[in-house]
Amino acid sequence: MAEYTIAVLAGDGIGPEVTAEAVGALRAVERRSSHTFTLREALVGQAAIAVEGEAISDATMALCQASDAVLFGAVGGAGVGRPDAKAQPENALFRLRKELALFANVRPVRPLPALLGASTIKRETLRGVDMVVVRELTGGLYYGKPSEIREDSAGAVEAGGASAVDTMVYSEAEIERIVRYACELARGRRQRVTSVDKANVLSCSRLWRRVAERVARDYPDVTLRHLLVDSCAMGLIRQPRDFDVIVTENMFGDILTDEASMLAGSMGMLPSASLGTRMTAHGRFGLYEPIHGTAPDITGQGKANPLAAILSAALLLRYSLGLTRAAEAVESAVASVIAAGYRTPDIATARGTIVSTGEMGAAVAERI
Image (cartoon, rainbow, N blue to C red):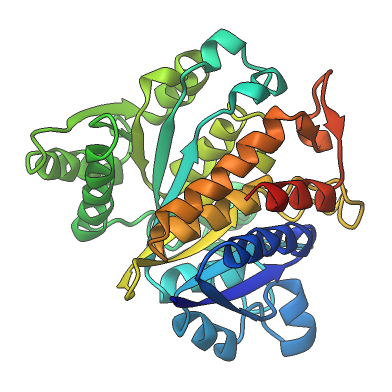
């Protein structure tokens, strides 16, 4: 019998609702196997600010460090998040990513056949789409310094008011690490990597391209191509089957994966894994979360789609715990529920049966 410790940080908005269903899926796996999951819950985001005074406490960080993986819901609320603001809910994610060295965000995009009608993209365009977006997570514009609004900067009055600056910084080591991970991932797929940048404008992208080409020489079985981010955005809609593994920097990956979620029909269908440098006894340590946000407009109404959170739990089983068969059982259960016609409002189709968040989660758990 194997025992695993998982930190559960449900967060804000619909985070607790969808995380509860992901936990239900893990409990279903536990009941049908010899594995034992010790789930340790902690506050994060607005809930943590209200009780502990900051988006994530040192104690919660220590809990995550001592766990095999982290199951995460969503954080957010009023105001705009900054990496250095303790009283902003988004700081929880920034701190987790940086201090746990979660450098690779992995987002699989594989539309389910029964959901092709839920997307605004034509069915024939979506058939056969199977890609993974690998986003660098700890560098780039989101972490560069200086990043500030300058109210009293020199020349501000003459220029018409305040000015602002953000800084994009990437080191060669950061780029090599993420490109190498993408190439390793592609080896187990269709051996194709698309590196996305803006090398015609940005110095960071020119370095990115140079390093990517050097790293690719270590993988002669993998085909590397470069694509500008605007061309990639168009390609995701026009010919999404062309992509196997996409690797890109932090901000580009943030934007492109939200776009790619529409291929699957909804942001409520897309899971993610943020993987770190640390290896545990079972696999690679990581944080797992649905890509959607807190969705305050539907919080507490039973309308949230829990499938992205449940599929994130499947990624946790696969990457951090090494339980491939259990992960496949969860993913098969999700596909079975969708094929049976169960739908939350975000993926509603003409022939589907609308169910609540809890009903969808229960239907998946029953099939695991």
